[in-house]
Image 1 (cartoon, rainbow, N blue to C red):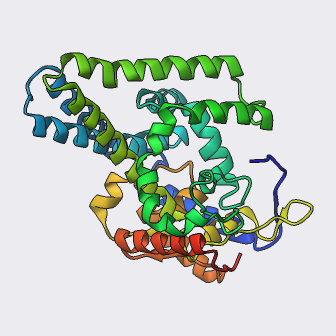
Image 2 (cartoon, one colour):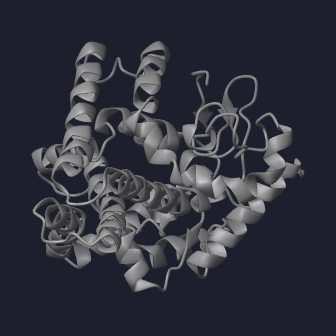
Amino acid sequence: MQHKTVRFSKTNQAEFIADLRKQVKAYFETNNISTYGNWKMVLKTIFMFALYFVPYLLMLTGVITNIWVVLLMWALMGLGKSGIGLSVMHDANHGAYSKNRHVNKYLSYVMNMIGANSYIWKIQHNVLHHTFTNIDGMDEDIDPGKLMRLSPHAPKLKAHKHQHIYGWFLYGMMTFLWLTTKDFKQLVRYKKMGLMKSQKRSFGGVLTEAIISKVLYYAYALVLPLIFIQAPWYIILIGFFIMHFITGLALGMIFQPAHVMPTSEYPIPDDTGSVENNWAVHQLFTTTNFAPNSKLFSWFVGGLNYQIEHHLFPNICHVHYKKISKIVQAKATEYGLPYNCQKTFMAAVYQHGRMLKQLGRGDQFAV
């Protein structure tokens, strides 16, 4: 992936985001509501941590010894790990969890606690994905390597025609890449791209942090269970795999249907690096919401089914997305802009599967 300069239009419907921000700001001021998290966010944080650590402690202390129940506990840990990533770490890394920057900073390190690296993820997600959504060569979320083709501008291989079948398995393996090579490869790449210059961190410092955090993660998540859980070693390894597979699959099925969809556009900057739309309008053409009426689902996935609102207002905590979504949709309609939304989660997954199949076959798209 090459780092290049991409410039969004400053004039093409630029009044849309100014008008929208004004109305969203008025909503919070009129209702005297903070844009950050509230007591509901705190309760959710406690629940997600409990969902991850309670099964772990029940196994480690010998309260649960039945092999099948042990595997169930690992599965629950996978859901807890997913919930922590989607509902806690994500908001903290965007600075949206709390108005206290120290709270955001320390909760963002939860990423390190579950096997990845907060600093490296911020560059990939906050800087590259949120700024250059669906722009080939810039957005790493649509550049998973040669095994999958998530952009119509990416090279097509013969194996890709089956990616709508095997792609789900690769999503499940996502967190294993975090545990092994991904963070280190990204860190080297980001240094070469000059993306670390604006950050007050050194390459050596981040590298050391990544190594230490991974060693500590393996120590508590795998070594201690192998020593203390009263089950055969292979059951522990199977459980560890189940936990990570559930987490990876959950993350893939939430993030990818938000952008790799039949309705998504993949703009190509011109020779000067310019993109036709301004940044906010660009987000509407490249992003999709889903399951807006499912309260429980939205609660668990950290409001990321409102991906449009998240991309337009990443510094607003997800507990507010449902309310401001009505403002965003109305304003998009007023300006004649798209507001892509799938009624259910399964409809979004189905459409994403369709898109994987189309991309794998090399179908033509409006880009």
